[in-house]
Structure formats: structure tokens, C-alpha cells
Image 1: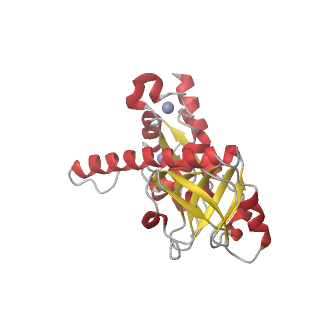
Image 2 (image 1 turned 45 degrees about the vertical axis):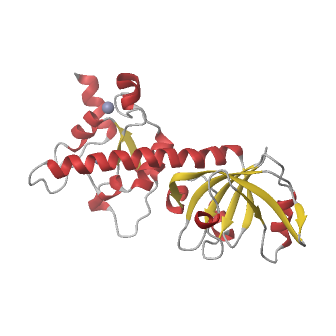
Image 3 (image 1 turned 180 degrees about the vertical axis):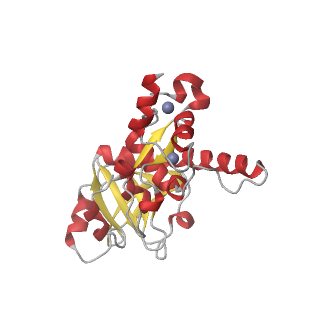
Length: 253
Ligand SMILES: [Zn+2]
Ligand SMILES: [Zn+2]
């Protein structure tokens, strides 16, 4: 089975208007470059594809399945695709880049209706990123409603901008998974389904040391910690602990 990245320009062909789950549509590679047409020749029935909306949309929105190889129909070379499902939520380019799933050189090749091969690992990683985004958005919404109930609490003491960006959170969880990097706590092991996928995300570089427009690397600059460890890290405003400092405290008790 092959896996494909499928670019579409939503101003030209919007999958949300054109397709429903289970529906089929012919797909044509447009553009002058023969190379892109060659990828079309390699599509086989049952191949999987991820539809990416280019331009201002900039997000992965749907999972598709090829139901034919390249066929000629009314003078056009097409592949018929079936829509398996819309990704809920869609995965914005920013999250894909932060999670490092697509090599950066792919950024330049985004253009109207083109296909690019993906590895199975990349494909599964991208679909998984949508699942992680879903959990992160739910957790952030729960956190927000909890905070709004606290009278007069302006912002949670330890939360910062980067820890709240859903794309960065999802990418951090994608890299570091969901076991506390300080004490090894695993919410799913302790709480079962209720805890599945839950972890807090801690940004390792103090905001004060960040210059404007610094690029955050979720792999190096962010970590995952349980709620207890996260509180302890930020307990003293003037002395935010490093992960290893907190580990030392834990070991000394
Ligand atoms: Zn912990
Ligand atoms: Zn933190």
C-alpha cells in the first residue's frame, strides 16, 4: 500500500463542498511539471491519501482511499478517490512542522492539486497528530472553564503562552508521549480511560529569556510532566525548577 500527501487549493476545489464521507470523486494532478503526473501513475487501488488544503487554509483535512489506479476519462487522466473521513480537528501546517513529521523541504512544493509520496510512518504520524490535537483541545477547554470559575484569578500562575498553543502542545506530546518526565507518573495507568492521553506540557525556557520571534522546538524546548510535578516546578515564581532539580528533590525524600 502507498501513502500520499494530496495538495488541493480550496479556492479552486474545496473538499468540504465537493465531498461527503463515503463519497467518491475523480482526482487530477494539475500543473505543468511531468513529475507530479508521474506520481499519479504510481497510485494503486486501496492506497491512502491525506488531503491538505493549501493557501490560507494550510491544514490537513481528510483521509482518502484510492478506488482506482490512473484511468482515462473524457480525455483526462484521473484517479478515483473515496473520502474515508474528515480529520477532526484538522491538522494545521504549524503543528505538522512543530512535530517534525514532514521534512522542511516539502514546504516549498506545496501548490495546486499535486500528490507526494509519504512513508507509512509519516502517514500514521499525521493521522495520530489529529488525535493528539483533539485531546489537547479538550483538555485546554476544560482548563479554561476551570479557571473562569476561580474568582478574580487572572491567569493560572504557571501557564504561559507556549504551553497553551494547541499545536505546540500536540507536537510536544507527539515527541515525549504521556509519561511524566520527572516522576514517571502515567495517568492512564492510574486512572484508566479517564486519564488516557492526559499530560501537562511544560515549556523549558523561561519567557524572560526568549527574544521575540524565537522559534520553539517542541522536542528540545518543551517537556511533559504530571500535574503535581508541574505545580512544584512553578511553585516559586522567582525560582522555576529544572526537571533535574525536581528529580533531585524527589529522590531525597
Ligand atoms: Zn510527575
Ligand atoms: Zn510549566
